[in-house]
Amino acid sequence: MVLRARKLKRGDTVGVIAPASPPKQESLSKALSFLEDLGLKVKLGSSLHQRNGYLAGTDEERVKDIHTMFLDPEVKAVFCACGGFGTGRIASKLDYELIANNPKIFWGYSDITFLHTAIHQNTGLVTFHGPMLSSDVGLKDVHEKTKETFRQLFESKPVEFSPPFSPVEVVVEGKAGGPVTGGNLTLLVSTLGTEYEVDTRGKILFIEDLDEEPYKVDRMLNQLKMAGKFRDAAGIIIGDFKNCEPDKRKESLTLDELFDEYIRKAGKPALKGFFIGHSSPSLAVPVGSYGKIDTSTQSFIVESGIKEEDEA
Image (tube, rainbow, N blue to C red; front, side, top):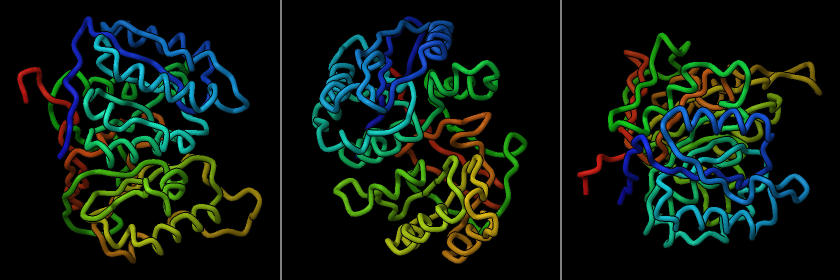
């Protein structure tokens, strides 16, 4: 069963937490003003100001923040301030029954990918792989389309990813449909062999990453292939692979050669070039909603991840 949170409206209260690493406070402040400009009231989690090495507090503190926000009847959405490291550490500590009984918008990406996979597969809740507050919205040169992608939380209509906003290219021709899953490639691979292993059966799988050299991307794509994730998928979307260029090894395969080896040969309808991930603009994807790929129109369309007030 698919769960959808109710849409946001002006005057609603939203929570902001740091379930991975601590955010940059100056950028976060700017992003909080953006939420207020959308007509939203903000509640801040205690994890935003905690420090534990590269983590925003202990595992227990970050878990408590998530549970507190989902339990709070005033909070209608939970936004992650930033990614970083550590969400895989807390997946086994979350109360998924609590989350399922209090369905709310949950938004973030990068390291948050582990939580998207764990939450949706354990509760059915549609979550949102979307731009971060401090590391995207809080930047000086944030793209207007990055800001606009938050609008999908206020109205229930399909989300369209298509030209001219993305330099889309066809990898494998065809049409495909299915629930959407995916996110950051590194984090998806880290789920393999765990109880939170990403399930791609009959689904549209999307991938993206940042600062990974081609030989590392090669290794991760190969692991997904050997785990049957491309074989099981209905279709594949390749998002942004920012700064994934050779550094340590100057003699290198290109990303296109890797996509050809692992994705084209998988034979499933596939498109690449979407502004999904660590890109500018960065566009949000409802994880768990039904998506369609049509390479003849170079389009990727996903059903809304929210519901209207009067929907059951």
